[in-house]
Image 1 (cartoon, helix red, strand yellow):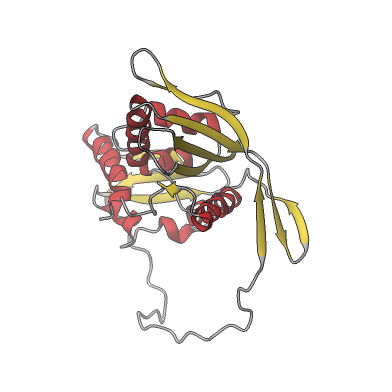
Image 2: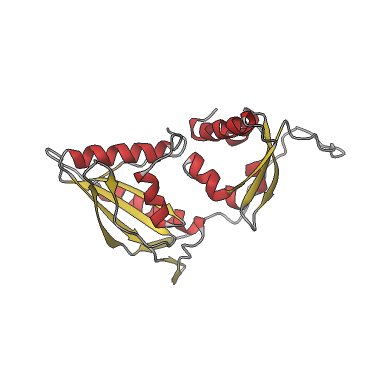
Length: 253
């Protein structure tokens, strides 16, 4: 099973041990447990299928199944035991179908502009705990730059997205036991600052996208838009080569 979804297995196993037979989670709660859901989890039912996918195995290994998904309310209901067997569709077959090449190739020239605003410095308080600048409770993209440590030649940069910027950075201050990225960034920041380095936070709560000569605001309230802005910012850092990206690819943990 992929390590990314292992914390969800643990959470469901704990609920089973406590005698729970059913539980509902907001998508945001599941996202926090597994350190981020992919865009398809927010609008496609197959992602939540009780299948052999890495996420499907995470709840099946804990002896739970997805009973219902409500995309409008962004909630998912898990129930104990295996998923009930559905009626077999007449004429269904496991034989692979022949795939035809579509004529409308996905060839689209897109330019994304992210407007960064400096939010302030991360520091350590008297007890050594991280203190972040107060961010707006808005959806957007954030960038954490680690610089000026002794013998540090190149800045380290982490870029992420969140539906609530203030809450997201609070997760780095007090990471949960199963939140791998939160724990990793928490440790990186504490070690960097304790070594005399600096950490600066910038945020973007607005962005634009230009396609086919037409520019329009990128609706950062939608996760797919935030992910597009996040990846555009990461791509620019990679291409410039002036900093080291410390993001890890999904599933690499």
